[in-house]
Image 1 (spheres, rainbow, N blue to C red):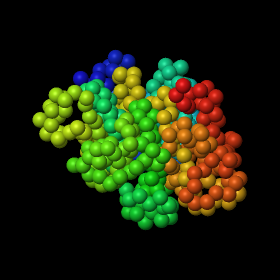
Image 2: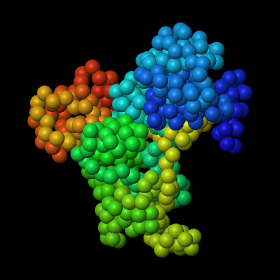
Image 3: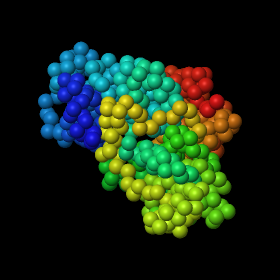
Length: 430
């Protein structure tokens, strides 16, 4: 039965629509809110953003102009319970509101940590668009969700979840996973900054920092680390190979080196450039000659490697599937019990003592994927922790940032939660 049908039945069963809080009304949040607002059985009860005009845009897309704006919990709660649509600039109060599901769509690790942590403790399901936060403290958030009987999930629509769907499908068909990954759909400019991409960002109606996180590779590194963590696959190597490929040659590119490919072993995550973007893929093989023969008969190629390919990911358009799965099936679309991989920091310029790191998509560092145990061995700092950190030891451009180079922001909640995760033994597989 379709989710749309089941959501209508669920609303009848509980006597009301499921109430949703959307935190972050940027490009992704606006699309997410639009999709949710058109679904029967769902009420977009509150939209939270620092810009009230963006809140109005989300509701305006749905033909809603009567909005109760307030920063008062009591006022908002009464309006929500009365079935009204509300808005506020104060994300700190979302956990206190009478909603069932919180969507964290800010993309900022520190803010995401505050919203997600407080909402899970308040026993609300949380669906996040904030993969940067997940690869930093995802195991702890998953445990908190389990302890409170709620769902924590990274959303459908981005490559990690959609590639995971293919991995799960292949495993259910008894295939060996040789490689899983995505096509990178922006030019790779590792030293790009918000200023260098500003003109392009303006044309695309994007935040320059967001576009910069794509072009400098941070987003790809983060997404592939999330895929490794949730599937149990390993990174192909520090930084990954990232070869050029095409849809037609995926199975050749991501074959083992002995067979002419780039990989030194199977069971890994990587990405490629070329026409594979905006899709995701899994390269598989089977140990039974007859099944390999069947795959060739079914026009999947000569073997022994075969590519399973999804040619798209629909971002905010399909992200609501995560919400529906949480409500109806009580399952998470993506979580990580521990970290196989980390997103660490590579410098974009020389940094002297006293310099302050601006974080993902900024001027100072970019994300770089690494095996989690290698990152631990080399004392490397996760990029999700470094916003606002101060350089205390000089470091040159193109080097990996260690804990010895920085003084982290002691007041940062995500820094505190990462320490808690480490202390509980959740970060690395035992």
